Length: 426
Image 1 (cartoon, rainbow, N blue to C red):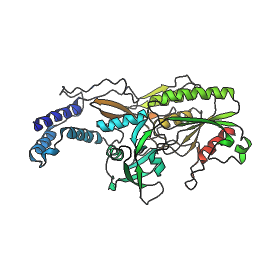
Image 2 (image 1 turned 120 degrees about the vertical axis):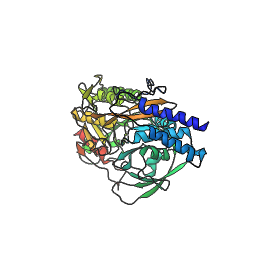
Image 3 (image 1 turned 90 degrees about the vertical axis):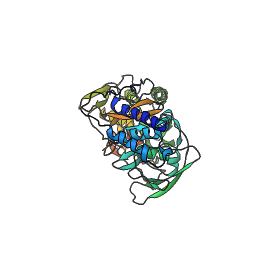
Image 4 (image 1 turned 180 degrees about the horizontal axis):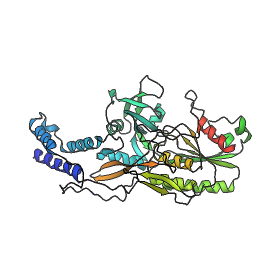
């Protein structure tokens, strides 16, 4: 009976390989309107210029069934997941991944704004697994994990050569459990072990405040232009990620900021903080660009044939006239780079900080049924002027207009925020 079940699973594997195809006309993550396209009853391959000889898979399955010493280890579902993971990982693209049900559920929970874990977005730089960004006030951030850190091991086991998806799964875990990461900080060659207590991470994607310059913490307001303009005000908006609730939260904040600026002439502009923002929904990025840019292109998509499609701003902007400074760093990736690049190209904002991560690709998320999911890199994205920031592995990222780095010896002094405020009052 077990052999029969495994053979049935392999039929499903084959169907995945030869029966699955997707359209590339949808460029954002969107789980709500998905209609399944997998036909598990069909064995006819889609039109293709490549042929597949499946005899090796049948041979391996047969030998495992007859020769492997521990028959209890022949778990059909695990074999199915393993076969699909191997097929997808053969592309060599760390952002095209198959997510088994547990991992897919975790991904959706993160976008929904609440999940158990350490609160850090991971990515690939060359062959290294790196921290794109720790989330604000997360266990990872509190333990000293920083954007750009290279992860060498998890719980005293080397992860060199292991795929990103597997490492993420090892690091995740329930609240009140711990995980130890072996980390190589940026600029250091000495690994350190950091023990992190997992917790329930509740992510509010947007925070904002309006303050007089003299009341802004972390900057020096006792000299220069900041001292002269100490009674002027700045609106600060921090976007930590593009998640399920970003659009509704943003609409409220943008409307409130617009009303404040109209009624209070002491407000000099907006500091838009996208540091350590690992990205998310493309549609939300376009909506936010549209708040600041009156007309024109928000972002371009380039498909595998080099054909470019321009996505325009919506024209509903409430903040098209207010001065803006955008803060970016190595943890700014994907959708946050799309926003930053568009505002830079349209001369609607000055970019201050460090160069961004450099993830210039678009992924489409597909539900596969039974809780599993597939993320597929479908295209490049480019700034309105046609600049590509890279694919995350060797991406150059965005270059800020004013390069300012934080002083690691004085973390309480936010030199990047200080420069942003200076730009607005000059």
